[in-house]
Image (cartoon, rainbow, N blue to C red; front, top):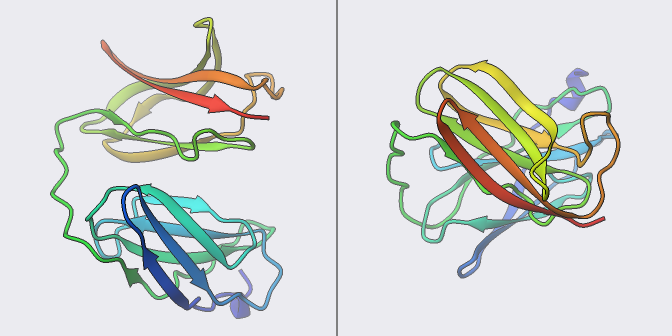
Length: 195
């Protein structure tokens, strides 16, 4: 990334509202043409386990967060060549420290956003190295797209679905299911696509 693009962004507003929890962020824009600002967050300082692209606007509402949990947030800027700036200054929401996550469970989070239009993000946790299949199914139970498959190392992962099938064609509005299969373990989340 061009060196003048590697500037720190300054978050100037952090507001928490009541449950369901929403955090509103606002930051100074960079002096460059960008594709998107990327909002990162997590429950430990400097350990951002989640992110979402906020477009090229300088504010964003992060919804669906757990109530009374402290979140650490930062923003980067991504240009049209895929170059990403350094993290902005970190800001901290109100709330208590999150309890340590249990390392012994497979988990598939609810996708965000849901319902969605142009794309949605899925996060899953693997307590140990595992051979997985993360796929999208239609309401008839037919597999229409594989998002991730094969061996994965333990940890927290995130994948994106752009609302297309295995042939790259846009699927129609309706109900779909994201299924994480790890051996005999099968975790399912319902999703709604609105075109």
